[in-house]
Image 1 (spheres, rainbow, N blue to C red):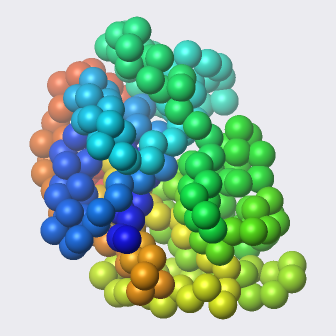
Image 2 (image 1 turned 120 degrees about the vertical axis):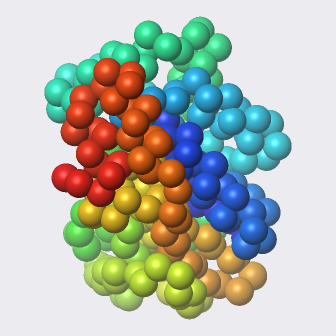
Image 3 (image 1 turned 60 degrees about the horizontal axis):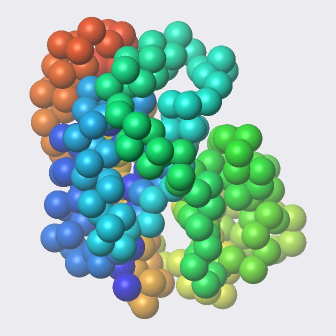
Length: 247
């Protein structure tokens, strides 16, 4: 089975639909949404409607920290994120809020682990920003061959080489990487709705389980339209600039 791994949609409908179409065209049979469905972007209602339909069709859907903050504390967010969360709260009905609240932090399927942040204390929203954090994530799920996460808004691939050591690789988009079960792997799949590397294209990954490969993709979409929606909604200007590839 081929899994499409999408994280950090952040209410960016244009990027979300572009990645879904890209994945389907490449044979994705299962959609996995690794959290942060809302926050930052201008289309929380439309994105959640699409997500609920996908889950009804068998998609795996996880909770991210922005999803949790809709009905939870948001004091640790920066000013732009808090402003976007407050705006998002005003647009979500009771059913959407209940859906977000119901989402799990971790999903396990055989030797596959899906999580928004880290498998170690997932509720703490730890960033997988180096080999130390990656190793702690590996240690939390010793029976897993494959772990998949988002949250950092970048893409990395970590290999567990031996006891107590993880190596990091920066993947080349569009290149299938062998990830055989003779090793353990942790993929941080990039951000659909808000990449932060100066590249305006959306990011996601495609895991081909039978072939034991993972391919990280960048997908062009109407980022100018998405940024225009952010501005029209009165959300912080910095959030629109990020969609345009500007820090």
